[in-house]
Length: 174
Image (tube, rainbow, N blue to C red; front, side, top):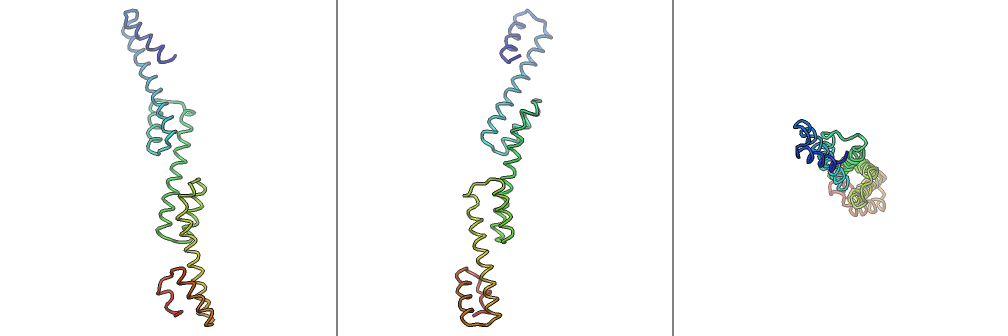
């Protein structure tokens, strides 16, 4: 029975052709159908925008209105996906602050798994490249210091400066 059909029944009932109890039942049925219809519209809008809070609210309202699980499936899947994407973004931000090679690698892999846009990965990938170059420069400095070969030391110092290593890290080589 559709919402308009229930409205028609109520109007007929209010016209005196039905008992008071029947009118109340019909009004309650109409209200329930309208709430369910509004919950469906809310789910559609939340799926369109894919905002986490909107998805959560729409799911809660749909469950309150006792919509079928099948009707909630897409919204719940979208919510899970968007929460994972948000966590991946947070992981990228934390890895950028720490600038740890392993942390950056893991955060980038998670972000790629969650299909974040390349633009969102750009800074983390650049930081990873910089940190890998610094790590290689440190290894070069250590090796040059170990061998004490003058040309090797010069090259290692130049590379370390190019990679913006701290002066403290260059102190022993100079």
